[in-house]
Image 1 (cartoon, helix red, strand yellow):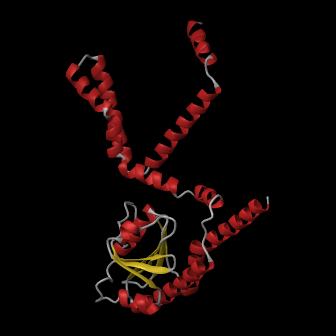
Image 2 (cartoon, rainbow, N blue to C red; image 1 turned 180 degrees about the vertical axis):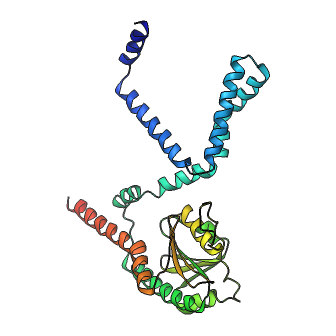
Length: 287
């Protein structure tokens, strides 16, 4: 009865904000476990839990030196966790930043938009890339093209050479010619223009990638994991045309299917959202 009375006295002090607080912490912990479930961080977390058990035992058995050492370790745990789990934390923050709901919200309440000139330039770049990909596929010429979307890739572009030119089949042919100085890197397309060439991309951290995939495909997956970019790869060995989006690779595109898919990824969603935003802004002006 004493235990029950003590529990009841605690329950009576709980307020609505305490319930919200507990729920928020539960969601945070669930999100953390979901994030690290299939990464190397799981093993690191097991190691930290083991150290915690050792610390509790050392305190119970009065092992002064060991418990003091572990206490100092856990006092600095915030910094240690930030260092150890840096890749996972960065990945989580990038995913939050790329959430479509946030983008839609900010677009609705801003006057920023994509104009008709931008849409024409993107459509032209899509057709140029598709035509180039077909030619490269037949000639077994390797290529790696990155379509920039919301996430800016200026840091990646700085590893190559800024071109800032209108796209064309001839231009792509010169860049990816096997004796050209920029053919080994990736080319970045920004707002329908070839922004930079010869850029170095990060390789994928996914250990379950098909072992038959080469460096180009691994680099395409890598940048698609770290950004919302759409990455096109033409295999030098097989001539297969592939797209990497969100860390997933789809293959065997033809010219028609490639144009359709790139239009969906680069144009359809933006045009649809911009149309809604224009209607929203007109409604506000009328009021």
